[in-house]
Image 1 (cartoon, rainbow, N blue to C red):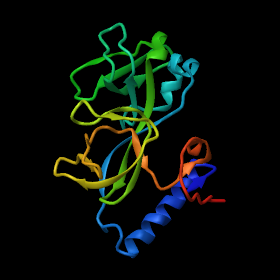
Image 2: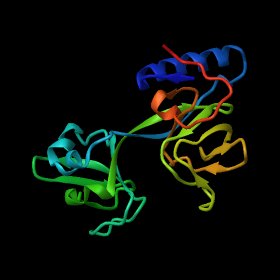
Image 3: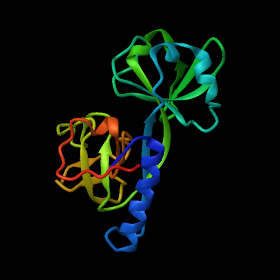
Length: 197
């Protein structure tokens, strides 16, 4: 299904899942996994400390992920929560809480900022990856925009896809894949497309 907006897509997705559960095509019980949604900040916004003052630091809901190595010992793939911000600087903390340091605002092109939340999924759900990466084995490539199906969720919360690939429970860059925006649908091949209007 194709929807013009994310908000409408989420509403349609919830209705689809509700009907699939009523018909017994999806299990009733969901499991929650980590989800990271990009805040879509421009490089200019990421360079301004005041941008991060919108996150109060108490709920640790803003996550900075480096997509390139960076001065200060930051490695590609590392994630930090925004702990504190004022008009001049931003303090971030490693996900395990062992490191607290200043965010290198001048290197905004080397990181992305996300809002952390939880996503409810179950076996049989369709999912869409929102950032490329690697499967849990460290070898299998996951493409940005890939649509797949959940075969199972194991005891650690890792997602096992229909083709047998295992995705780490902390991958984060995925969403339910029943509905895509019209922008994301470009270049996709399907025999039937239904538009949500």
